[in-house]
Image 1 (spheres, one colour):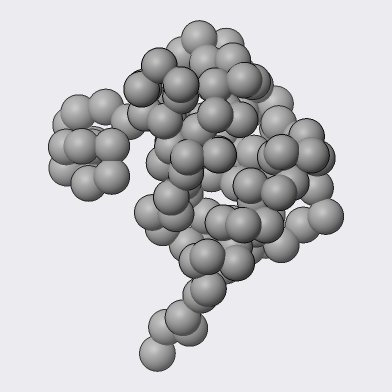
Image 2 (image 1 turned 90 degrees about the vertical axis):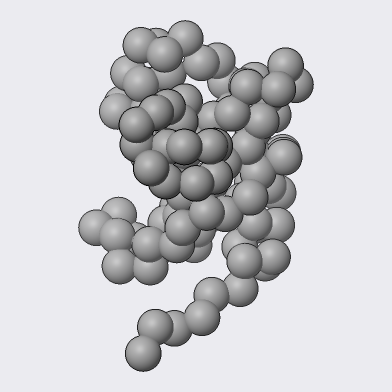
Length: 108
């Protein structure tokens, strides 16, 4: 039986950490941001408008989730980040694209 997770508390914690800029980007996330030309401010925008799409409580880095948010220009961004660390760790960042994603929130 899957354990239910509290999305609203998890999202609030992530958004509070991001707003305080208590955030760390892994080298992988930095590389993805460079390759896809996504800036830190865009990530912060996406976190502030984000919604949790998937929860990964057993991730090797500890409890994580996949979020989708939008920049102030309306572009969707996905990112995987920790959910229970004292610092918000962003593990990966990308723009959701076909064929893997039909819409920013629906897998292909």
